[in-house]
Image (tube, rainbow, N blue to C red; front, side, top):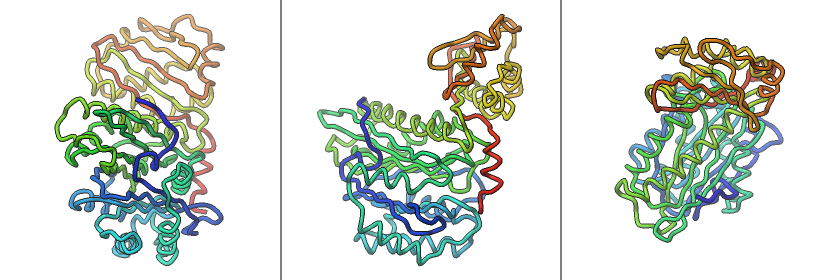
Length: 407
């Protein structure tokens, strides 16, 4: 696997654009389009929140029932959630407009929105934005970056990644972009994410690969414990790489799954590290657990804990908070068998073993926790399973941002 520069335009046949439409924000890009020159197989996963935004309901229908997908239109600033029939009609008008301009079926257009819940999107600005997008879309890396920037809300950085693999002598590219900074909590899938690839693969296997992979990637992140109404992750595969179509779980399928896993993991970590007000990416890795599910539960319990997140922010080596979060996770274990370490890129320090604290240096431990990327490593000594979860620290700025979000 070769990591390359780029995002949604890295794969053959994909174009993108990002423009200013003044949906809510002024003097910044707030609408994006991703377009494939040929029809795509599509797969998707969506929020588990009972309150689903209109674009989620639209996209679920398209992914499940349309013969193909060829375009995605995204706006930021207004979520088009809790907007009733008018909100769903907004999706339909957006798809109709894009279809007219691109010469495709409305059923081949996905839509997505992110921002404030409860507001109606000004349809005239939205449709004018679609026109700008259709006129300006190109296949350059810069166009992909502009699209990634246009879908941001409280994000501080745009998020994109791309890789290439070789399948039967053909170069296959997978690229993606996402947005997410607040209202991030797994259970599919806590953000907007768009992955494009030129691989030839059946729709059924594309969906299976995506559904399986989110369990250990996007479902393992949390910023604030809030699962959004708009969570959407879609993968579009247009087949332009020219590889033999993958219709069975062969070696080529496994290679594609590895590439998809890298894309999803990278984007998930970028979101976790860019949590609202965050100063550090907070990772918990649980090893030697009795089962995979136990490892997932334990690692997520630690990164979700507000006390653990606050300890990371304060660089406070209070290991009791992390041990406590493991203890209330619901997984049964013997605390005296557990080993707990603090890690950064340069150093690993054993903090707790055999039921008691080790003779560690508080000063050195605090230095580790002051790093921009911090890991709590937990060895359960119960089996061979492991899992990793990602979150961020909890700072004063998180409250400031969310207390003033609508203004």
